[in-house]
Length: 423
Image (tube, rainbow, N blue to C red; front, side, top):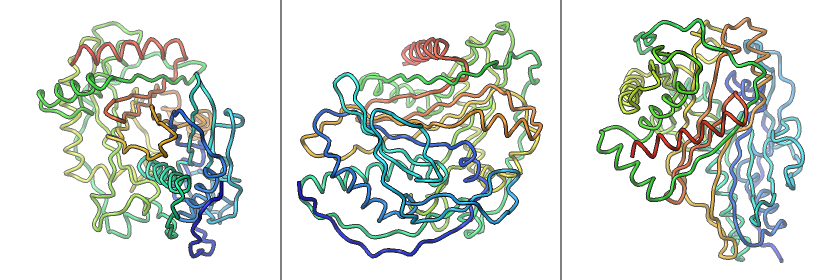
């Protein structure tokens, strides 16, 4: 097919150092994946051209990292971002090669594979240049460009400046440090909590039906809390039930809830203005196997509101390097990222999308080695990741545990059962 393309004005190559937060993502090679599962033909020539246009519109996607100027970043990699760098557009087939973006070569790539008669097309981007919201915007934009090309429409693209580092964006807006002023360590730190040995990071997924998703929202509304808070309460109970500890032992769990700060800034920021604009509310609850998820969720929601009011959600960005090397309680930690309702991906009529998946890949050994080198007592701390989103009316939870595939499958079954029991 003959492609109809637009030729935008080119920006010259720009260079800036990575911030401490961006350097942390570079250390772990953290890469965000957005995948559609579809039926129908995928035109690789059009897909490659769509990626080319997207990179012209957002030159940071055509960037790479190069050795930096030696600035102090708490022992993190000293790297600069250069974009555009003229890197090759990479389309991988059948998951050959690393799941990570190679930041020496390209900060984004495409992946096409086949499973159970369906075609899975993924857009992957390095977390150092994009958080979940920005990556999701680029993913939708990629498919919008693709659809225009396939349908014979001339896309219009205009280049955007490189997104700012979060620390820079906050400094430009005079966002000051703040503290919640509250001590959330409500119960003693456990000394006999088994630490994960021979960590095998495993991932699982549960997906509710449209009717179940609707009932979940109705239940949360009836309880007077958010769906996110209720799900965090449920996840906390499941985490506690999977621990090999006496049932009477109340385990403190730290529940990190990322918060998109773009619209809370003055002036507000667009998705593409800042690489990573997710602040954090670090909630703390003490959990028994029989704890009420609603009660836990209500506590976490109250703590989130406190952190939004006090400005504590900005601390994870303003003080990232400082917090990284600070002493922290060695308690289990859950990161629960809620992407909310994902906008539908626009595709040609010949390509029918029937599922969407989002996930993040990272080198956990690099993180563990770094924390161990710092002498951190949290290098072996139990940690779980939950990614929550709704697509086409169905809520899904992707999660990763440090305890192996068999445990992850059992965890998924118990998590789904507890959600269904709650609604």
